[in-house]
Image (cartoon, rainbow, N blue to C red):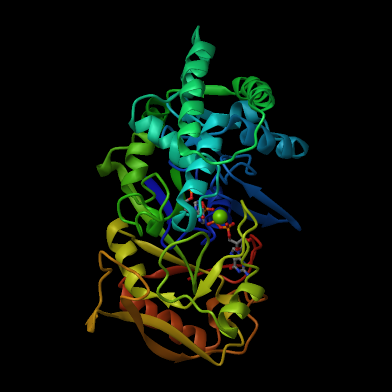
Length: 423
Ligand code: GDP
Ligand code: IMO
Ligand code: MG
């Protein structure tokens, strides 16, 4: 049985949490493959909004097992808070939530290092969520990291101490003023580790291999988005993991020839939170309207998201890198009421028209070239079938499908589970 993937095609926050929740009824296992608590995945049903950071978005369904894969980095402190939030929902977490022994741990000093590094960068800061993601993946690839499985071994506290001491020296190296009480942070960490240890740790690659053999249906849930990928994103304004399809192979131990559908999610417009290039960013009333109607505030940090028109140059690139087989367009409802819509179909780059993503995308190099389309006035949030779509929306969808050469299978018209239209 193949493993399907679901991933974001822009700069994150496309609506992955919502769609994973919608699709979970068709799957036996939902598995997160990269990222960590920098992610904020929102789902809404029965009038309640849930934000998950590390826990996969299938957790509210009784039918599915949720796995935190080896490619994920886990902060026990944030993880404990997520578990505490789930307490009132009567979920058997011991059997429904399994953790890879090979997932790396975010230590309190990783978070501090993130803050020190960002402060030291000054204006050139990445705009990190300050969850310790970069420093933790640096320790992973630098072969110094601590993994979940270490917590089952004798002597893990000595290993922890040595790493935390090294981090303190590195924090001092940055030479920035940072207020913290490490003793307090460590006490909180140790309490949270106890909670983490109350769950079941597994060799997730083996578990998933057996599950595939047994014909179980598996959906891999991505975090962040393709343009934040460490290799293919707008480097250095990226996160520290491979957010693209290949990341699911390394982040779960699934062989490439076992990947089935690749579901690519995008917003009908574009947003970005944090620093970095964003060619179609709007600084006018249209951008402010998108932010207001779309409620564009980060689910993890609460920061306002920058908004702009849909960028097809970037989207095509993401479709290509991921091998997307089906698209899902989110937040179409936010565009209702715009008289005209713009879609970026090419860039003017150093005086020339190009239709690929150049190496150096800085706003002074790149000017978007737009195709203008008629908008629609109709409110989409109460619609339930494609035959109710206004003409303008149909034209928008047709245009995107023709440009991207991949069908748009789901159109989302609101944050709730029920506001999801299949085509
Ligand atoms: P994720 O990180 O990809 O899971 O996305 P986030 O949860 O960070 O951000 C998506 C936001 O848009 C959340 O607040 C969702 O509740 C909301 N959302 C998802 N789909 C839709 C939609 O179709 N319309 C509207 N208006 N909101 C949506
Ligand atoms: P989800 O899964 C949007 C951004 C940060 C920053 C950059 C690096 O909810 O879509 P990091 O904390 O990884 O060092 O930050 O990446 N970023 C996200 N933006 N959605 C996310 O996740 C993000 N995770 C990281 O804002 O610009
Ligand atoms: Mg998010």
